[in-house]
Image (cartoon, rainbow, N blue to C red; front, side, top):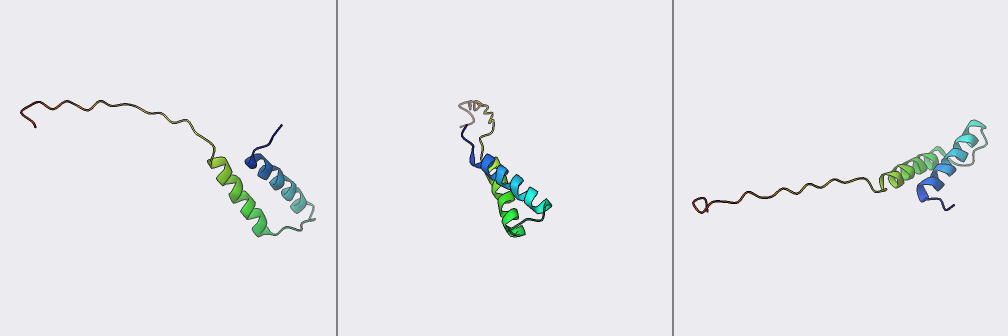
Length: 65
């Protein structure tokens, strides 16, 4: 199974959070924050449902032109 970039970032974050809890961290808090921001950007990048409605323009009468 091929992971998306967002899923890979999520895995890294989970490992980093575990390392923080066990106090075996080589990464900085800034690294963690950058990864959280990257995850948010990647998740927001995914396509969403878009609904489009067509509205016909009203025809003008000859006297309005």
